[in-house]
Length: 292
Image: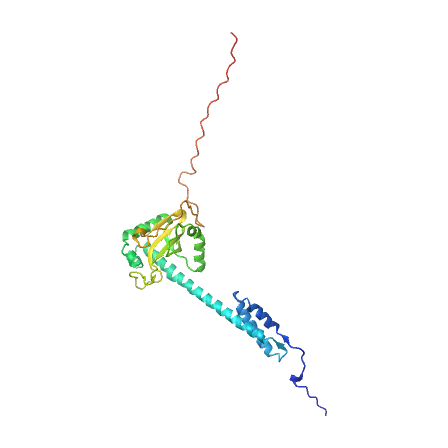
C-alpha cells in the first residue's frame, strides 16, 4: 500500500516575508504619544502585532516595529498617568484644603463664632481681630452681597465661578502678592473672596480648633470680598498688617459680574426728563404806516 508523507512544515515555501500591518499602525499611534490616549492604543496594537508575528511561523515580520511602538506607547501612557494623577492631587488639595477651609471660616463668621474663626488666622492677624471687626465685616458683606451661602463644590462648579468673576480679576489695581482669589456664593449672586495668606514656610494658624480642618498650607492673614461695580468689604484694615495690601479696582472700572442683573434704578421710575426750553413768543407783525 502506497503511503503519502506530507513535507515538513519548515520546508514549505510560503513566499516572501511581509511586514505586519498592525505593527505599522501601532508605531503610527506611538509617535504622537503626546496626545492623550494614543499611548494606550499604541501599546495594545503592539501587543496584538507581536502575538500575530509569533504565530505566523515566519510569514510575517515587523517585530522591531512592534517593540518600538510598545516601548514608546508605554512611556507616553506612564507620562500622562503621572500628569493626570498630579493634576487630580492638586485639584483635590485646592478643593478641600483651600476652598473648603475658607468656606468653614466664612461659615463661622456668618454664625458669629468669632473665637473659632479667629483661631484660623496667623498670630499677627489674630492679635488684631476683635468681635467688632468680625461684626462689621459680616454686616458689610450682607449689605452689599447678601448672606453667605457657601463655596463651589467640585471642579466644574469652581470653573463656573471663575468664569463669572473673570472681569473682577482682570481689573484689579495693583493685584497684591500672596493672595488667592476664590469664588463664593452669596444671596445676591457670586462674589470674589481675596484670601491673603502668609508665605513664610513656618507660618501656621494661631490656635486651630480641634476636630476641624486647618489652613496650614495657606495660613490666613486677611479676607476681602470683592463684588459687582467695585463693592469691597475687608475684614482687617490693611494698614494694620505687615503686608499693607489694599485690594481695589482700577479707577473708573464699573465691572459687571456675569449672571447678575444690573443694579436697580432708584425708586421713582425713570430719570426725570429735562424741562423743555421756554417758548419765546414771536413778535407781532408790524403794521404799515398810514399816509398823513
